Length: 69
Image (tube, one colour):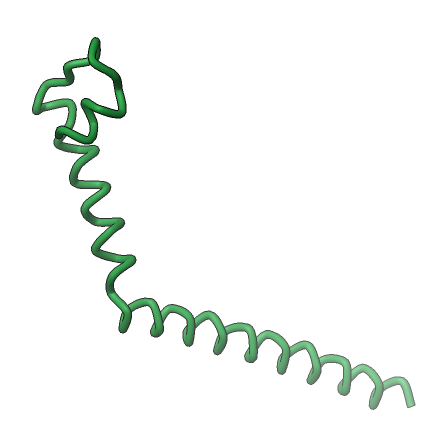
């Protein structure tokens, strides 16, 4: 809450009801950023999807070439 007040300046005094959703969001973001296993899983999952997409595109090209002959 102190960081939110410092960010908003001395004239801004948000209530606890106003700052709680922001605090919860920041907490979730920091927690997600510090979850190394989760980050590695997401990276691996995105890589796997990309590989599947590339393989599907390659197979479609190969199929089109076979039909064209």
